Length: 478
Image (cartoon, rainbow, N blue to C red; front, side, top):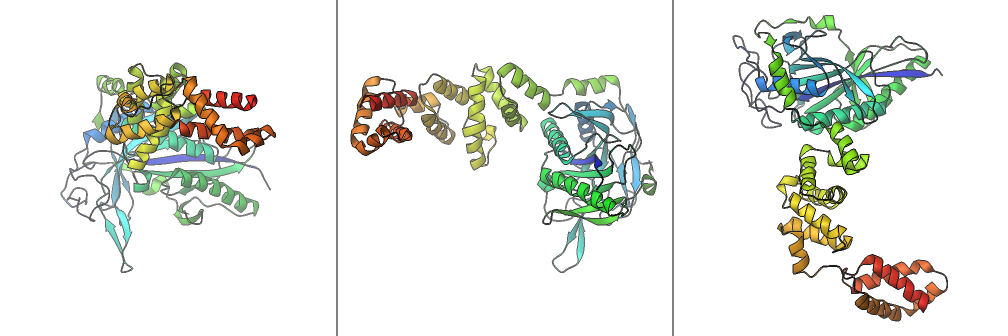
């Protein structure tokens, strides 16, 4: 069995978060009654003329800048000709050429420092959606036809060599798109779709093998498993003396396997030519620099800053950077002189848990950055312990009351006075003579039970470290 090297190119389609379609003013939304968000333009009716969506163009340029691309100062739309039922015009408005797309020759850096080359970032329109009807027939919903669609294509030859890198690339790219606000990233709704192109070649050779394209994968897991399966399938075919075909393949999620759909078209089959109904797009340096200067700090740079300035781990920084709102919430709390690590711990534990259960975002909840600062300070100063901290946070999340007020109203401040703690320790040991005898017999682990009983007597307000110390001392004394 030969050893093979994989080469994986990635084509990612992202529906842009505009309110209207690419060349008409029909609204953009997910779902809804079929064929209710259509007009003569997006249906391709004779005599209708397209008008480009300026916001969509700016979104693509901003993405290209975030991906370190060169910007085409003169760019045109092309017609990509193919004939499927979900394409009402018989062609798709897209962009073609090496340096004509709005962005080209860029790169994306993975968390491990590896750079994945970006060949192009271009703008096109989405197709309709084929549907299987209850009566066994088929239909097509054109609500999605004409929705602004951005395609991001990696370099050739590809830099990605395995399924882990393919998944990591998609994770990083999705985060950037969501961060910029150009795509909602909802893969389950088809807003973000990935089409890996996989080929293998014998180790030690340079010529790329015959590629297959996996169509419309809509989860990180599918990308990872799909690439892994295709590498195995292609290797098994070659080892058996078979011939690989350049084809488009579907992905069966249930069986975790791919299946042939059609022989893949070549560029010549699409007969690209400039769209005569759309004038060229021309930009000047001032316009591009204005978009560049308005760019937010991107997730990778922000993660590195969190680690450097706040002492956070890579894992904690990444959890804070799952979305832009969470990161902004964290930074507002830190700006109020809150302890970064304390704020981070609250956000990735109790806050994340409560938000997930309630189905809310940080801004939709009763918690403000000031709540986090106050609670983190109460915990850091040992005014309350972690158990009480959870109770206080739950109450604040429910009512919006400030942590200080909750602690005072419910008399929850931690007790550090030896007197009442020692009395409780003696009472617990007296009531649990059998457990004490087991401790004296060498079963030192039972001390944890006794500590818990003392904490219970103190209603969670005793200093846990002091309770542990005093229980040990009293056990040794007895």
